[in-house]
Length: 635
Image (cartoon, rainbow, N blue to C red):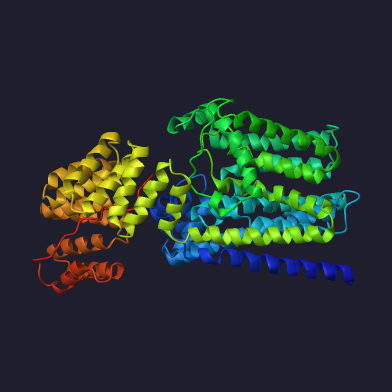
């Protein structure tokens, strides 16, 4: 079989397109590889002991999948465990993985658009410029460099969103490819069976990456109707089977995640929010329109992680609420109208609206996050690219316009990624853009504290408390900062206030216990730690409990707590040091020496461990150290 000249030309164009896409993505995200962990990265990665896989084993993978939070997203958690195995908490590996997932998703978008246009062709009268390769390339390029996608790529933990999108588009691509082979050959063949099986597996992978993938059965059903059934509404036995099957799968997914009483489950989510269900639904009308404005004008000055977005109290307050509802209704009517004469553009709009439904409707999630547009914007960009290439005049102007947009978006993406490179810069930027939102201020304070700028941190904590005076975590962190300045009594006041607001506040209890140990009030320290030790697996609580018991000469109990602390978190130098001290007193000098060496490896220059190694033959004069109280705040 000979390869035609046109086939060679097409393969050359495809290879060139992929190389250009890869180079562009690596360039615009090259300044993120050393960006620190922020916000939810702290407790979903740094504090997630389930992903600390020290050897490649099924047991480690199973632990990461089943014991990490949230339990409904095991696949991303396994990927975090693999990153930990390869480089512990070295951010380079985590960011490189995110970039590769983003690039791979862009490639799948390229092939998805290309196969759709090749198999079903552009509408009659399309310009030569609107060739499948050209549309697919520019659509993939504009989506890959879209600045709003930085939150799904640079924000490490949002790998959950990007992995879900990768498997989502892979599932749809395999469906289209397998279904096309089935249609062309008149009956289902092994190759088609393999592709459709891959579609099912990829769909399941998308679902266990993030739950917004639940719309996939509906999207496949709509694709089947728009393209393979050519929008025919005959309700034949075959069509009825497709519809019933798609709706059954979607309903099963809903029941799987919301349980037998989905209404009660949804309403329960609102008990933890500061808005009601009607307020959220009305606010989301405005949010979706705001997302669309970001698609067209995603300047870095408009992008942030934590928004201070005002609620819609009624359809008339603010007045834009009703206007945005009207705009959404107009989009739906446009979909219906376009479905008659331009199925590609209609499907692109349907894709956007359908994929916004889960996170922008009745489920009690927080109001707005940019990473929620990662999947919905895919085909919206495809539709826009098609319009420019097919209808803009003259042709050179169309190409020039897309190139200018791509370059502009690339620059803005690089600029936005620059802000992610430093925690202080990142949260300062967010606090300036959302001055009435308390979390940017408290996270900025945390970053300043970690950088040793304690006075500035105290100012930010206090500013945050003017916005949310009953936030226990912020009060606890203010106490930590005051403690660093030697203002112990004021620190205690903050910790006690935090415990009044939330008696189960773990950090405040641990910090109060640490102060009580310093004051040699060991029984009081244990009373603060007792509820944590009973209910939670917290390494620092066991470390402090062991330290208090050791000072009370309850050696065996102290050893038990130090060992429990190491089971939970094996990389705390103070735990190894204190356990070594106890083992010296028990006469196990070899084991004690190993723990002192481990403490020095984890914390080079650790004075107490160094002294204890020198005095390994002597049971006296060995120091105890309680844990640090300044860890990332749990939100």
